Image 1 (tube, rainbow, N blue to C red):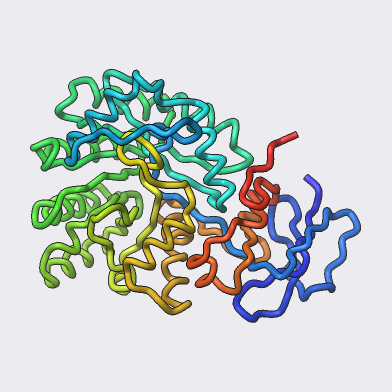
Image 2: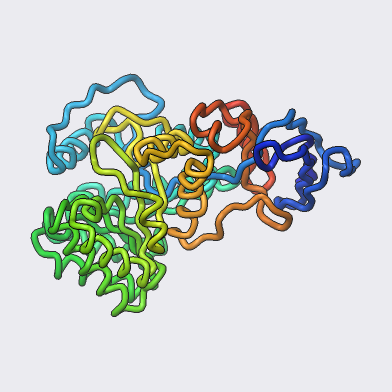
Length: 400
């Protein structure tokens, strides 16, 4: 890989222009503009753009996407079970999961500045491990473009679908995944203790991480959170478990919410939010102030669960900041940090940083500050993954 010298970029609002020297996939130097010289380097004119660290989509479902094909009108009913059933009916009709769709969406995410994604892939007796294998194949093809981590996800239920538990264990045993999913142990499965004991037992046996979908509302969801906290501490899985959605935390009284937050912080359980539709939004400043790590993701992108989404984590950050009532640049930067550092911590990774020695996972954007970048969301001028240009002006760079 040739060295790259990115000239005349800014690290913050009104900061002086600097040059970034990229060597061996890492940021080697950051010097005042014009003071760095490397005759062997490919030169890129940053033209005063802001340089930001690559973003993390910590919760998505690329196996379900309809991206890259013609419009498919939404046809599911209004409740969770309707969407699960609609998704399963449509798989065979529409040829899902689709290799082309998965690849197209991952490339779209890359072009928008995402350099790491965690995707939840359906596992059940009908589809078996086929979705995991297909996503793994595409992820390997795009390994130089984006890091993709899969969660083996029992979307339709674990206890209610005999054979699913065995498939999840097979996925772990074969090394297809290092993270196991769960879903609504009480509301969907009707047996919180059995559901949680099963997935925590598998996680402990195989050294896996856990990421549990928790759509449960109010005191029911809060109770499930408390059961998860207790098991994390008992099994010694601190820092290895995430709860996706988790909106029950904002639907109970403040004392109850603070008590759960304290438990989440102690167990180092991350909350992953997609800030979708009319669901309550997690209060970013309040929860981070309590020591709770929060990451963000797109959730479904144009699939049988909903017709919306574009794979752009900067767009998702906009929704997170807007619904939190954030207006100042400092507040908006905190929302951006959720989609960078928060997501990385949830996945057990080092957050991307713009500093010497860090991997060159970054993007250039024509904006004065993070606040303007999130508010305006212009196309990314240049995206690098480990020092390689993977997208320009909102379009992926095809390998020659």
